[in-house]
Length: 193
Image 1 (cartoon, rainbow, N blue to C red):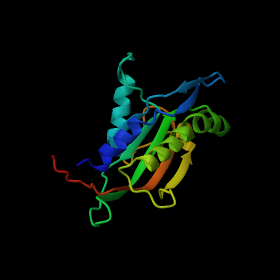
Image 2 (cartoon, helix red, strand yellow; image 1 turned 90 degrees about the horizontal axis):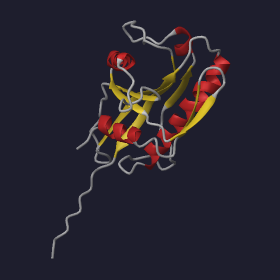
Image 3 (spheres, rainbow, N blue to C red; image 1 turned 45 degrees about the horizontal axis):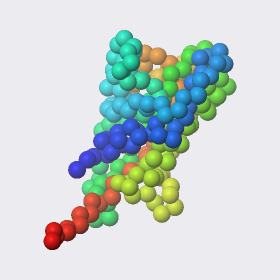
Image 4 (cartoon, one colour; image 1 turned 180 degrees about the horizontal axis):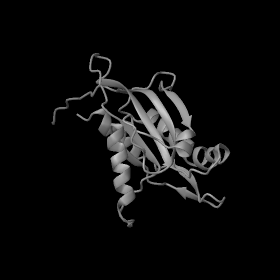
């Protein structure tokens, strides 16, 4: 039986299908990228920072997975296993991030980071969660959560809870209390004849 950490990782791995982002160089030249890889990291804020720092220090190569765009799942994930209606459920917190430049204005961040990269990743993530057959989505197709675009990380820096700075500027969408419900596994016994 897979937990929410593994299931969300599989969902993120499939995001590149039907995803297009536009990556800009900071001076207005943009390149559209179809089916970009989306990085997935789970852990507490220090672990996520350490993984990003390690990726920054490693030499670029063709087989190195991209650092951004990133979907980070903050752990621990407390799974409720208290109902016959579902296998487990949890409210999780996710960060969707991309690289940024400190000197950008909020207006540049809006277009370069949020419109071109972060919102498309967010929308694709929500769509993928709704269509995943393992998840129990409300009858109205809504997955309850909060949504916040954070423009200050890129300008003033992002920090862990212990005050450690993230090694590079990022722009990010914070998705809070995202309700994930995993359906009960139903087995059907069939006799071989």
